[in-house]
Image (tube, rainbow, N blue to C red; front, side, top):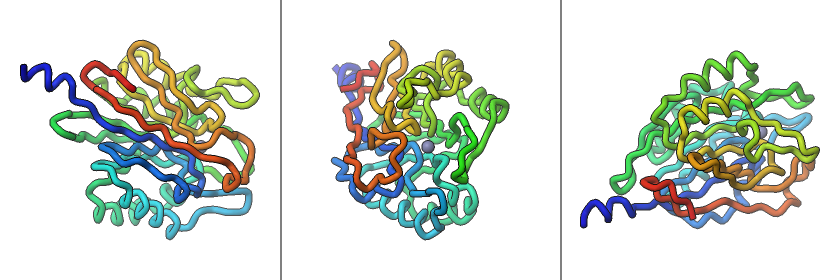
Length: 243
Ligand SMILES: [Zn+2]
C-alpha cells in the first residue's frame, strides 16, 4: 500500500557541534542531512578566527557527502557575526548548504518535507574570551518566542534548560525560555551543543534532544589531544522514530 511506504521513509542524519577548529579530524559517514550546531572555529584567550578560517570551514562543509548541510554559528565563531555579508555572499556558491541566523528554512528530501529553524543563541556568561552573538534574556525571549509552531527540527547553539545541559560541576546551563518554547511547539528534533560534557541524547515523548558536541570535555583548551566522535542516526519523521 502506498501510504505505508510513505510512512516508512527515513533519513540518515549526522549531527556535530563544538569542533573548535578540529573538524578536519572527523570522518563522517555521509547521508541525507548534516546538521552542525556551532563553535566550529577555534578561538582562545588571545586568538580570534580569521575570515579565511571561516571560509575554509564552509568549503569543508560543502565537501561532506550529504544532500543538505545546515548550520548555525556559536559563541566562538565571531567572524560569522562580523563578516556576515561576505559569508552570505560566499554561501551563494554552495546551494547544498543552509546557514541559519535566527531564521527558518524548508527542505525536501525524498518526498519528506521539513521546516527547520536555527539560531546561534545560548545563555551568555561574561568570559575573558571575546564571544560572538552575545545576548540576554530579553533578546533570547524575542527570538525564541518567534520560532514558528510547525518547526520540525530546531537547531540552536545552546541547550534548553534540563536537557543534556549539565556542566562538569553538575549545574544545568540551558535556557529556561527555550525550554518553555520547546514544550509549547514540540519540535521533533532539537540539535545543539555548547556544553561539551553533556553530549548525548534525551527524549521527552515529543522531542528528541541531541547534544552533538563532538568531544566530552568542558574546560580543556587543548582540543587537539581529545578524542572526538559524531552522532549519526536514522530518523523516520512520520513516527519520530530515531535509531
Ligand atoms: Zn559554545
